[in-house]
Figure 1 (tube, one colour):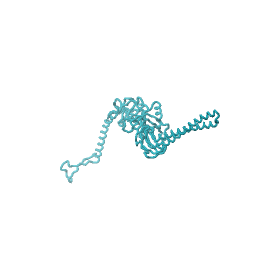
Figure 2 (spheres, one colour):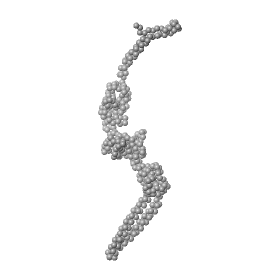
Figure 3 (cartoon, rainbow, N blue to C red):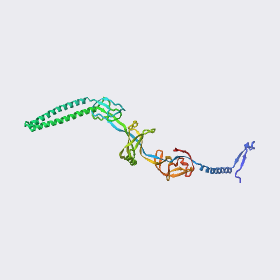
Figure 4 (cartoon, helix red, strand yellow):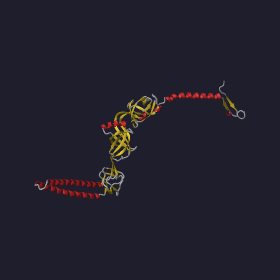
Length: 395
């Protein structure tokens, strides 16, 4: 039985071709099927022959050394800058503002003159109080003289005891009047001092809200200007309540250091110390509020500003650290691939601890100096050959 046959096909109306290359050959259906099967068989055989070569090729990987070093225990958060003291300056006496010595955004020192309120009515009141005082002092001296004279007359029975007692009462009343007048004089003098409005703190003034020429009342609700003290300055931030015991433990031993970064590009942080822990936990967020105190020598921290905060609680000595990419998650837990001395990969189960930026602490499973895979895991199986393309943290 023939599997296939080839028959020439003539052109030119059944006549043989002038050239043998002009003939067209027709292959039967069975022949086509046989050629297809043979081609497929050869391709499969070739593929089976090439597979061992692929399997034995080393997997390219990037590795890093397992390091032993001192690692800081830190808490990271977003904080908000708060002024150390905020003062809303208000008038203590009424009158017209006749002089303004401050402008918007000006830096002021403690005791600097900010405003002058018209003091002429107070000066008149002071003169009246001083006159009353002088009058009562004169009456007091007269009463003291009368009491001395009445005492001598009483000894000679020239006056009655009742007259002497009345003179003594007048003297005591005048003494009280003099003290009252003295207090009145001091009060007016104090109001005269209040007419010169001075800064109670050193700091940065905000916008001036009441200007020269306006009339203000004593203890007016209107604020003249707000002054924020920014040297030193607070940075307030919140941490989860689970970290509160560690914070309190660190505070019992020393003042934990707090660092803040104003922007992502900052490399040199502002440093301060943890100054206060709030006495309650926020029920809605489950966090506790902390405050760091900063000297702010360069005035880089401004009230209301948002900053990145790093609170350092302690240092872990001799910690085993690997790049975080080395730690993988599997069905049986976390593992890493260790590159052995014979350039084969060993899958090893580990116990990972804290994650510190790009590094992870390994509590169990690795030793310092070993080599772990940080890129190329997808090509690895236990015992596979590896080819190290790059060592990231090699010194």
